[in-house]
Length: 264
Length: 276
Image 1 (cartoon, each protein chain N blue to C red):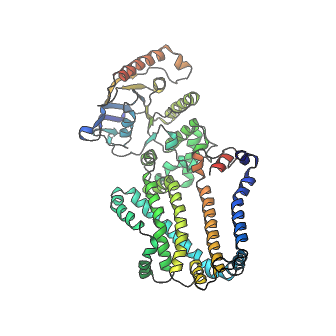
Image 2 (image 1 turned 60 degrees about the horizontal axis):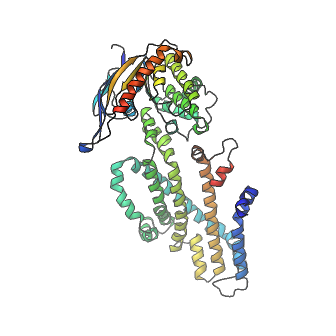
Image 3 (image 1 turned 180 degrees about the vertical axis):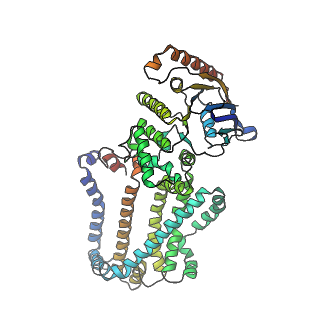
């Protein structure tokens, strides 16, 4: 694939050594094209977070590699931002919302006024323009995850990795956040790798959906999502094509969950 | 009826409740000592007289002031050294393994026993007194900082790494604030140790200070004055703690907020007030 911005090549991850060793990821190879929104689903406990941490350069794979624009990722590369699942642990409670969003700009050596402007823009982009002075714990779950997205946007990434970002917000807020993600993805031309356990969400958001096997993880199949864009919470969900894709992936994941072997 | 008392009588009542026991104890002291003739247990009225005429008079500048200065410098140094060294040790696994046995050994030695060494190293002036205060008060700060820095949520560290924060930003804006509740707890223990050692160091030598004056009073059988000095120490300890708690409450507001202990609609709420 010529447009591959992010290439995961034969990624293999074993935790521990000798007889205690546990293979988390057997072999995963994937390519994410420039500007693509790729969703990854799999049965719970299948090593999705391990995969994402390896891709992000936070965890060294046992073998194999991730390449960003051809460069092997050995540490978190510039231009790649991460949104974590648990906003309550990824936003820093001792800082205001504004300070949280400004934080990733410290390393960029931008003048202060410029940093404040970028942060204000990012907060405005997620609909929290007037919440900068508050602390994360004064906001609702959905708003906190918006702050996390704003922080990632302020970093001005080309590639955005998200680890089950909307898992712990209520259904209404989740739908809003999904549409927010689609909006910023399109506006900024981001390349997105989106890990989720929510199959509806994967089908709704993705250009393609990767189904992983139970641990030790492999790629089971890659499903093209040929639903038209822009996606719409009511219209897209009502399409017969949506239901067909959802059911197909659901069956695929459920077979995996049933086949899951107990750990030795 | 007593469980309903706090609800019927809010803040003012609760504050008054805290005064009942002290007032009762002082009253008891006053009453039992009023006709005392033994010099070991002088009437409280004499103690109060000495408190007013000596301790809140000349001795405020000549003794209380120097004690507070030594205490402040000693505690300040202990805080800086404890937090600084604790951060480095906490972030460096090999250094921690290398230093913890020594730390555990030295800190289990009662600090006053090390005073002669401090005397040799820093002379008989304020230097050795401050050194003793640091030597005693640094340990709770150091150990709590090490634990606090080590205990930072790995996900928070992932955030710092994934946004490629430089070491200064990572430590100053992420690691230390995350460890600050533990550090504050260590500082609070260090505070009482520092006050104790201020008095002990002054009793061991010197020419002024709370400890020196109380000991001099004892030697000249001026028991009332020495009791008055003890009361001054108690009041200093109380005041220092109140200031510390007030600062901590302000700086650590986020910590109570993040744990849901603040009433967010009405500023500092009753729930937070009752629990802290």
